[in-house]
Length: 147
Image (tube, rainbow, N blue to C red; front, top):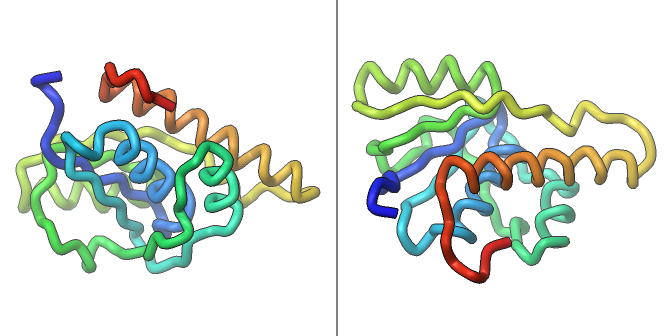
């Protein structure tokens, strides 16, 4: 685990669903070894469905406060992972003033799903699980208490 980055930033459109989920998942797995934060291109508020599906796996997202790139207190990240095309553009702009790697993990926006509450929750669960799989592949975890 010696090649882990020291700081990771997840970015999406509004810091309301995808990037807060990714931040919370990586913090849960490796927050003791990696500084993790998340932002959005625009301001938003944490999505209730995101809170619900993260709660299902024992991670509390209810206290998350959404922020934008302009709100960042720490201006140094080894890796910026964008989860939407809009955030990818902003992340690439960051490389003009910061030496960091940028990765694009195109991630479905579950807020566009219509239907019953269960249909919508299922879309959010799929995003959560896909993010968890990508995070575990990108940042290998060896703890026995993994999700």
